[in-house]
Amino acid sequence: MLGAICGDVIGSVYEGHNVKSKQFPLFSKKTRFTDDTVLTVAVADAIINKKYFGATIHRYSNQYPKAGFGGKFRDWMKSKHPKPYGSYGNGSAMRVSPVGYAFDTIPAVMRLAEKTSSISHNHPDAIQGAQAIAVSIFLARNGKSKPEIKSYIETEFGYDLNRTIDSIRQTYKFDVSAKGSVPEAIIAFLESTDYEDAIRTAISIGGDSDTIACMCGGISEAYYKTIPADIVDKVKQLLPPNFLIIIDEFYQKVVK
Image (cartoon, rainbow, N blue to C red; front, side, top):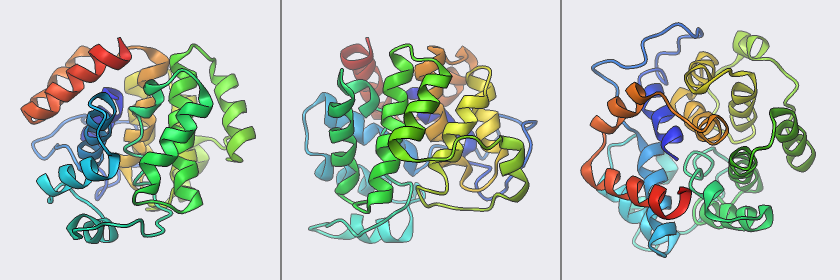
């Protein structure tokens, strides 16, 4: 899941200032973690410590209210008794990466991905997006090839993954829907040559850059098995100590 977090952090400064190029600085003075990271850590915490997803995500989001949450999610987090609100956005796909490591079968991963999504994002498109990212991670960490991952996701989720990043980049605009960002994140992974290239490719699309890079980064870490040490070191410097504790515990107990 650190791959997802690094993608979010690197993409944080490009969401509002799209670059439409793979040539850009990975870090700047304004680089930070966003809501994607907060909720990814929340999901990991719930998994390793057997907590309720809804309560854990609610608590984390309220601890970091200025992390960049969307308007409807802010209403959800402010509620004393939050209920799902029919969102078809990518908010559950961005936080789902720990789920791809949590179980040893696709059906189990699918069920948990739906569970983590439906507490807030209970629209079928959002659930599908979270499941697609989680299953992509599951397949990647289990040694499946890119053609195998592509074929499975196309068949099971109906996404068009035959487009190229160059063609997408030309006309792509800000789109926080799951259907309008999850396939693009997967395509960025499929076209990449290594982890850093995957993040650069994802951000170059434009749009919701931190979340696209977060989703792509989760899959890319699982596939390439490594993240450049300089990226990891820089990102960890930007994270709160309690996040680092959960991340380390997750890797010790779940990723191994």
